[in-house]
Image 1 (cartoon, rainbow, N blue to C red):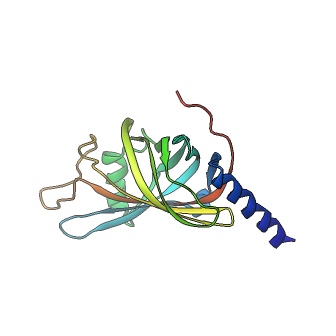
Image 2 (tube, rainbow, N blue to C red):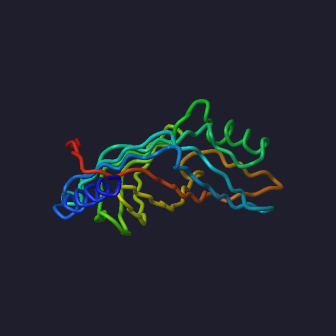
Length: 195
């Protein structure tokens, strides 16, 4: 019975995608996370952030998209308490700006019922209380209604107004490398008009 239900789900998705129907990607926060890498003179810093929530609705035919992905800025963890304290207090000011938010506006590409594809999503990235236009290309994998994507990009955090954590001895890069690992379900659904 479970196999039959999966078969119907795949056929439903296949028909929706082929007809250019609108789709909804619902993120599973328990299986999604953000990875960051920051180069420094002594060593490279690696860390993670938790994803709080996320839903993106998109229509490949019209290139319309809406919804948002929310990351918990207070969850940033690089494995060093001293370094993380400085990151949260002086750089992210996460007590004041507890969320990092991406708001979707446009979508290009085709999400298959099953298989892989390359898509592009554009919108606004809100970091440290400021909005920044943002576009990223991501490979996606769909398997029986489950979608996973790895979105890789750089954030020029110093140019965006965040504090440079460099010291006289320790110099760090002015850009941070980000990979968003997003996992969830993809189903047919409506995309409301954007303004």
